[in-house]
Amino acid sequence: MKKIAVVYYSGTGNTEALADAVVEGVREAGASAAVISAGMFSADMLDSFDAFAFGCPAMGSEGLEDEVFEPMFDSLLEHLGGRKVGLFGSYGWGDGEWMSQWKETTMQSGAVLVSEPVIALDTPDQEARGKAKALGSALAR
Image (tube, rainbow, N blue to C red; front, side):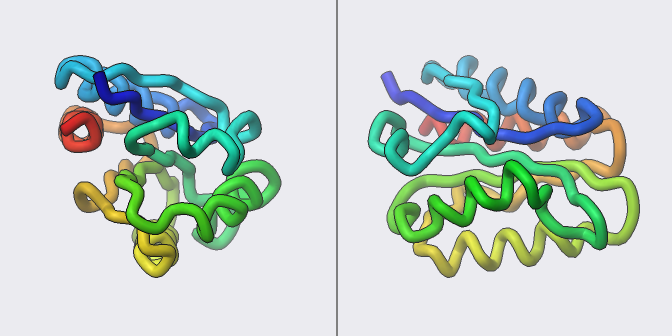
């Protein structure tokens, strides 16, 4: 059985709601999901999983949360080459530019994105939750 890490930071619960949908998709596809707070994940854990879903909301002027999530993610970049990854997050303003930048950084690391990133404006609606669930399913394949 494949083991998927769902690693995220959520300040308001919106990104957490997307994480829950990712987990649902992973489990429905027959894999196991480990839900891990961004502050508890490190590069030495990467080999314990088959794929990874990373979730972070846009903060400040459309950037990754910079106290917990961004330092953790930056420490992983040199180790993501060839690994299956999915990205998700929420935002409350702007146009989602943070996700475009995050996607580009992740791709430059050599990670294999299993689908387009999933974003939600504020509270995830049915469509965003469905895309997050599909992301989980794609990671489990």
